[in-house]
Figure (spheres, rainbow, N blue to C red):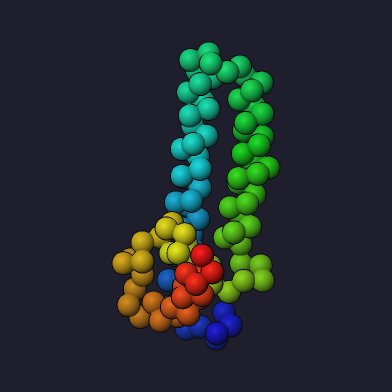
Length: 113
């Protein structure tokens, strides 16, 4: 179903799932990056090494995540299903009245993996 045909409460719920999924994915990746800061603080790597890793994070991981959660050319139902499928949003938290909207996309994602 195209996004413009979704009921407004469902759209809101899907956007919340996508937003929280994106934040959870980003937090996971930032936790890994924080280890680089710890290495810098303890002198295991230098400031230029840390700066390079930050740059790589920005140009790589952060951009990839933005693309994965961007709505350009992808429906809200697919993105919400992706957040659930990838483990960035707990399926048990999807409202019962919203789950049917992501069910087909979730099934396709599961079949692809």
